Length: 496
Image (cartoon, rainbow, N blue to C red; front, side, top):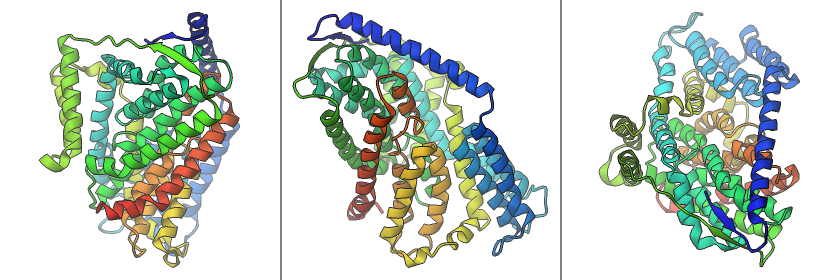
């Protein structure tokens, strides 16, 4: 843990008070959530009722231009939209419900008659073991190992040293470290880890705007950093899965070449925005960050396996081994060596993995039944130039991901976008899928927009107004650069 040495007196007492205050607020917040979970809210009731209605309508009434399998898939698609937007049931429950309904309604095992050549039911179930899921499985196990052996906190302690002295420089350092960790760990886990480091630092800052700026910097950097690698955040995996289903392979390194420049630009812009709004010039803070490295056999073995895995991910073009295979080899190595065990597997973020699988299965169903063609035919997309389509889809991704989860927004939009890519001249499938994945990760204007935002809000240092102001500016500016600049850059670099 970091021990702050501030230039103001009573830092230790302030840090302890800040830690106790955050702990009390988190306990109270957990208690409120438990009560809310036990008592059905109006939103959940509305979601369940509306979901049942939209599910039944295409089954009861004939939909012009759609055959029976398309109408059944439309029912599943509309139900998924309602349940993911309202969260009437947990997101992961909706994901597995989508897979189950596809098996029962639009596969060769459907309860109702299906035409010849219907999709084999195993293809929908295979989404639960899609190669992209295996890639994320390896990433999650390495991330959990980093926490288990304190690699994450030790790296933070080492990397923050050059940024001490100035509060503005310290915020930059924390954002760089958070973004770096978030490239290989989940955004939520990264934020939780960094706040364990940040809480004592908060106590060394004056109350009010400086503390709010520091607290906001962590979720912003986590959300932005997640776009940098395929394993950084679920929307990336959803895009890769959708592209792989259509024969487009993006290597680990290629994704980073596409996403990291944007990540760095947004991160720098976000830091400048935060220090202008919250951190006054001349505010100083001294930190004593100590790293305590584990040197036992298991810890050293983990360090070697994690480093080798990341190196293999980043050099896929040299050895031609798929990043998905490398991720699975990492799982094997960690389990066989005893570095990680069955209990560690049990603690993985399985709901996230199954949520991604639900999105992959939804995309398969939409494409296999012809629903994508029908949906796209509702609008005259063909009259729009490719750039306009990219701008509209990027704006939709940003808007939706501010009010529903990033994964849910990606699950809903990417299958439709992939259908668009086949019918509009000049619109590359890779471009539209990656743009949507990255745009969905930039929705961060509300406490409900993303778990890192909720963690920051729970500290009590951040107001909803400040979060909205910062999130909107970063989201709109970042998406503008994404849709107007990055596709041209990717094309120039030969990536699309």
